[in-house]
Amino acid sequence: MKGELEKRQSEVIAAMRFPLMVLLLFAHVLPMVSVPIEMNLSEMNIYHFISEGISHNLSRIRNPLFFFFSGFFFFRKLEEWNAGFYRSQLQKRIRSLLLPYLLWNILMIAAIYIKNYAVTSFLSMEPGEELLSLRATPWYILFWHTPANYPMWFLRDLLCMSVLAPLFYLFFRFLKGYGVLILVILYLSAWETDVAGLSMSAIMFFGAGAYMGIYKKNILEFCSRFRYTAAIATLLFLCCATMCNGRELHVYIVRMYVLFGIVTAFNLMDWLINRETWKKLFCNLSATVFFIYAAHEIYIINWTKGFFSRTSLAGSGGGLLLSYMLIPFITLGICLGLYYILNKMAPKALA
Image (cartoon, rainbow, N blue to C red; front, side):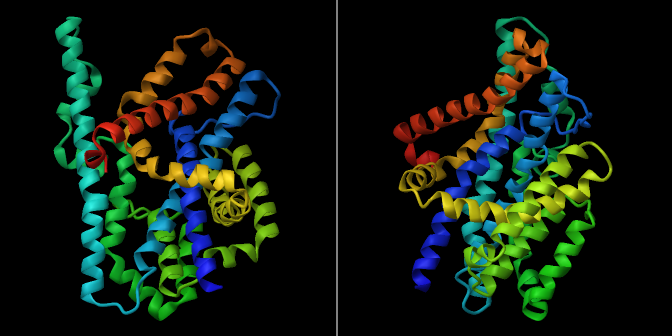
């Protein structure tokens, strides 16, 4: 029975990865600055309500869930804490986190140089602002504070959490569930360390996952207890967060949504993969998630956004909404196409 629960839990986590990556693409369609929602039914306000609701609110569960998965799997097989366990986990993360982190930042920098030198050579134009900015930025900022391939900040924070794993172990060994409560209070207070690599989101959710892994808790069993309560709270806080978008109160309400939204996401996927078709689809696509995450910011999504901004769709709220819905899926299609081409041509390099 326990083995079946563990297998089901692994299937749900694997299946969740791809839909969360689609949410990430939606999040990256809009600028980081939120737009306040007005109380009217104008075409433009409907566009803002839907796009802001998805990108700056609904999608906010994506990074916390990935941090949670990472904390959980770091400690899942822990039997006894010792230097050997810690060393073996760090060695795995050098290959799975540090090397990809360096590689994809280097690829981003190389892409900027190649694009700009191609423009200057073939079109006789001046180097673009992004190249001038790159040249003026110190290397430690490009590779740590504000990564050149910006989504890599997640791997940076995850590297820090992995290095700090002994502190998480000691924290939960002595405080147990009270430790999770302390992290929740800090998270809901919107307190931040302001240190690159130590975001409160990483500390909170890597920590929560670590607690579940250390004490061998079954995530699905825990989430199913609050199925209906969490679903109602998720919907209410999501609506409230969207209506408070761009306002001071938003940061607190959206964090309440995230806590309940994570529970609901587990319950929803647990229900969805009862159908074999969905389980196969999402689990098979799970292998593509990291490539999409790392590659989509290397011009793919920005060129797609640039294309739509030059069409007549950019002139109306309805057109903007249609563009908003199309851009993530076009970006996704391009990334999947590149992934499968590379997987055929150079599977080892891709891995």
